[in-house]
Image (cartoon, rainbow, N blue to C red; front, side, top):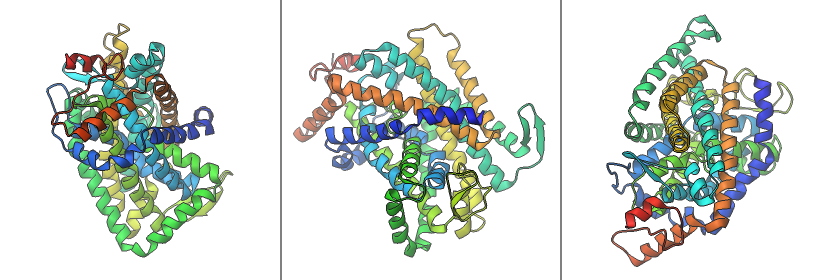
Length: 493
């Protein structure tokens, strides 16, 4: 199974996808005149503008949902994997893909707002919706929806729950081995998986409003606590910081594992972590109630900075400052750098746990276990919401009685299975899901640009209204030559 998964990943995550992610970010950075830099002040203002309604959620809640999808295992175990397989230079390429990806995030999230729909008492939207309406290719939208349900409903939740299970076992012990149909499993992982599923079921059966309320409390609190711990460790080793940054930048171009490995792992884990271009963030962006589509696009662009430039960098600095990492070579069991024992997996939270433990004894292992519990749990919530949105999209075309209930059961099964299985298999399956969505979404949003530039038109319209000092923003798609933006057309009427 592992060999089969690895062979699929070698095709999906070929250099073509790596450079497509970077090229798309650069393309949208140039065409939007680096919107991610020009409007940083406006991003902060919009973030705390109260705009929740009976049907939509607030910009902050939408940011919390999308951040809950972004801030998770990728920030802790994903950064460790990037360093473990691509060397310290991979961190530089995570920064690059985050900076450029912020423009991609603006574009895809603005598109989601432009083409969103009302679904009962909620807003729905995302790539499937804008592929149908802006690209005019319903078959492409259906393919994306199916790929997203597979990725977010089956493949990706297992990575998050796997990291929770491993972190809990590392922190509190594995307990006794229990013989099951899935093999011999530690009792600690069985208990962890069961508890996660119970709480998850309570929340996902409560709808998007309950998901938003949970994530808007958990995500900021845990992100702040994580940053504080990282800041303490960095402050205690402040004299090393300049040399660490020099090592990251130097290894980005002449890295130990070769430039290709550093770029490949940096971009792969960067895209997994911040999700720019992957097509997951737009689902939460569409659920927000805003006066103008560009507003939520700007808020979502800011979330890339929070995820990668703050949290991923904090993780990387902790690992590199404390030397709690290995760098794998190309041969089986070969290491270019070996500071830890060979049995410590790079695709796990172990590097980060050991980094904190080495500076703050007795804190590292349990803290990361609980940080991952909250980070990864809210990411699972975000994945469920994304999968449900795409089921709702498919239900418009196909009769699918009981599909949402079946999805809930599927996600719960995936979470439990992921908790008890090996990390390498969980990450391999997750990479397939991320890669499929990234290919479909990035190609689609580039085609949409050449067909009508709706996200760019929305940005120019918003900037014009802002320069005029309007008291209340509005969005008239027909005036801008944007077709099929039915929600906004009805709102203008």
